[in-house]
Length: 118
Image 1 (cartoon, rainbow, N blue to C red):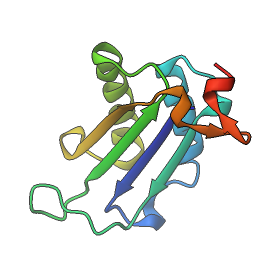
Image 2 (image 1 turned 90 degrees about the vertical axis):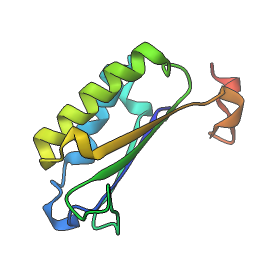
Image 3 (image 1 turned 90 degrees about the horizontal axis):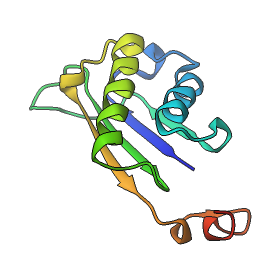
């Protein structure tokens, strides 16, 4: 159930329409999780400053049940940032990504929690 959220000051109209859909595969592949459980949300035109400037920047958050650890976070960071740099021209030096390891009983799904599924 990975969820990736990105806030960026890049104008909404400059964000490719399929960015979220394509980023699902990047996240799923990097985490070795089924794409059908991955959620990606992209918010453009945010009032966001990185280092005191309005140059293109981003703030990401990736939450997942499992798959979040020292080694996988490095791989995730590299793959997600490379994709965002390619698609948005967003420098990896101007993006932070927070990695959040969730416990299965803390995520609701289908009227219960993932504790009943995993």
